[in-house]
Amino acid sequence: MFVLVWATLLFSARDSIADTGASVEKRTRCQSGFCITLNEGETTAEAGLCVVIPCSFTTSYSFTPQNIVWYKCEQSKPRCVDSDVIFQTNNNRKVQSGFKGRVSLLEPDVSQKNCSIIISDLTESDSGSYQLKVTGVTWYERAEGFTFSPRATVSVTDLIQKPTVMVPPLTEGQQTTLNCTAPGLCSGSDPEITWLWRGPGQNDSHITGNITAFKTENLTAVTQRHSSTLMFNSSAEHHGTNVTCRVRFTNNITTEETVTLNVTLYPKILNSSGCRNQSEVLTCMCIAGQHGPSAVIPWAVAVISLIVNVICIICVMFLWNTRKKVKPNQEDRTYMSLQKTDPSPEYDVIGQPSTECREDGRTII
Image 1 (cartoon, rainbow, N blue to C red):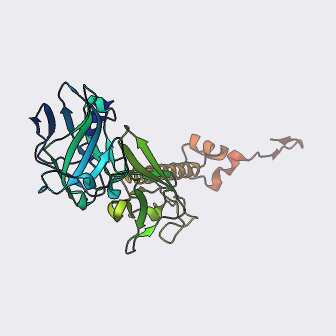
Image 2: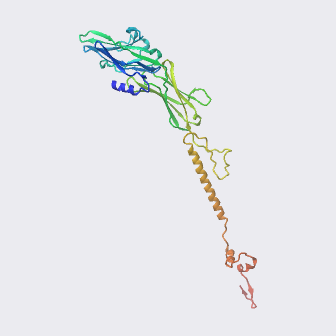
């Protein structure tokens, strides 16, 4: 279990369980058969988050460790006293009230001789020196305790880390989910995560009419990831809006991150004075304001539509002109056979039947 916990802490250093600064080298010191390994130098951390003090120890072969005690006291004191206790495994009554519930062992099994602790909900007052004491029994069942002289030094600075806000591509009319993850992987008090939004020229205000959800993910026995989601339907009014994720830790320590929403809008067909009248042949297409990387798509649709309409108009005009050419009638074909171009009245006899009367009274056609 310890290996899993420690690997998580190492790979999560950037997410800041603790910022160990430049002093990451460990040093082992021994005295009377008791040895302790601590980080040499100062371990730095940020207020509101947590810090890990790596520690391991060994004892003489005749001593069996049963209890671990941690103190915090002034560096000038040669040895911390009972009133300086911040953690112990067998008696929580002597622990300073300000540290109760904030200090945990990474490995609860004392026989593993791992004395590493994690301190959550840090404040600047947690800066100082920390000293370890191990109590147990000797081989002849005599209770003893040993206080190690080397100490771990912790420096707590202001919180500078910001939440991580994940924004997916936003499209008008579709449901969107934003995700905000609080800095640090601490198992102390849950932070309060609030979503705020600000339109152009407006002040921050709480987002209403939407769904928010808080989530705590347990990574190990002593590490957690806190996050919040915001779900809403994207619209044109959200484009260009600043959305802020604000995280508040214990003692009113806050940090926030702001992102600007970029909503892709759909094109709209409008019948406004800027378009052609309905009586005209061409279809009127007015493209609404389009934002985002896909803005070229509505323009492509408009160009293709215009080309199709122009081709249709050309076809209609061609057919109309073709129908105006009337076919020649029978009389015209007769004239053309005589190679005459002017159908004057003198040729009417060709097209009309004639009658002639003979002397015998018969009629000849």
